[in-house]
Image 1 (cartoon, rainbow, N blue to C red):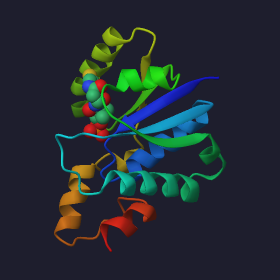
Image 2: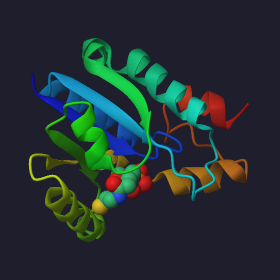
Image 3: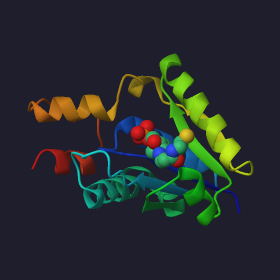
Length: 160
Ligand code: PNS
């Protein structure tokens, strides 16, 4: 079975993330969305909220491929988690050339750490390519409308 890990902070999940999740779940037999527990960052949404938003968004908006998706938290190295769950691939989304440099560095580093785990990139859908979680957080913090940027399951948690 080909399994992949899509790691990230998902604070919050955006429509760009959801697009990558849906497409990756159409490629791999099993996709784990790994939510990083990062003690050095103070997220806007708690770990439980991020996991719930991802789980509900996948179930509500991705149709049949949602059956192949699992959402789990992890701490430590992404490659260690990938190996622990038997994922042979790490999936990352690329929005623009500006993402490429840091993603390339991360992919090479991860491959050095774990040569059997490869990274594949999916180009984020054009209509979502301007989006980032930090932008969404800033807009939401000032009471702006982020309903075109995040799935409803994240929206519910950003705007109580
Ligand atoms: O959502 P993000 O912030 O773009 O995700 C970044 C993430 C979680 C994929 C990256 O920071 C990561 O893999 N962190 C875990 C620690 C690790 O493995 N670091 C080495 C990567 S080269």
